[in-house]
Length: 434
Image (tube, rainbow, N blue to C red):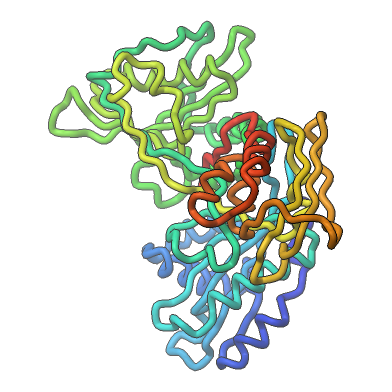
């Protein structure tokens, strides 16, 4: 499914009609056509960015050629070719259990011009994306968000969390493992490819992860046009005793007035093995002339907290990151493996109708699920919203906590059984933005 060319799919007619009734036009944007630069300008406005240079636009075009770009236009505006709403989407994969992937309809670049609020643009664009995804056979849609108050109304809900980590190196004496491999600096030329190779192996084992792409890696490596800190980028790899690159860290150092206590900013750290993780973090914390190490999109409870003498030298600020939307309950729940047997009837409420219904969920000793519409005479044991089911899917949250928040309800024994079954083999994490 991830190989599906979403560029061949038609625009959603319901959205087109809704927007037309408001005097707006719903249209596809060709990344190689005249509409590309105005589309990009609208996206930059939406995310408060500056106007891109020709080189920056061409760099982005390399990625966006493979994506489904959609714009909403007000042809009576002063700039009729600049869309007042934007979205891009593509078919990719979501790791649902270690070594197991599911097709995912990924959504990005959702913007609405401040001049055109409350005209149904976001409703039409997001509704159109979900209907298109469901019609194409996707059981799941996903996105990362800048504002947490928007996407719940379309059934999205956080399924993974990540931590922004800051470490005071003066207090963080290393007490963790001593890795047997070696560390080496690597040149910026070829760094993007190295990042991608390590991440591709890491993301296949980590629930909540999705594949990266060349444009993302070039940006991290500091070789994309417009990167003011590009010349400061450094890359270090960890190789195991057999010479295989098992981890990589990319960082810059921001100078401070205290020349012995600069800030080290981690652009990315991917580790395939515990040894690689320990070696890279030790390198960062023992770097000369560094007072603080800052890293984003780390595990919710970062293991480095357990590898230093003073755990409180590590500050981890938790935030939601990867939001999922279930479109097909039977197919979504069968994409992963489970930790314990289960037999339960769920009642899922979905105002948009995609996942609404009562569902019989049976999980065997092998961890595989069989999910089907429940017989009308079977008792419903647990009720929950489609949002709650999306958060529950990867095991990143317990249903007992969702029940405490009023997003689920049911018999205590059934809730406990779900928590045992849905417990993840590995804590879910999305380690990039998309």
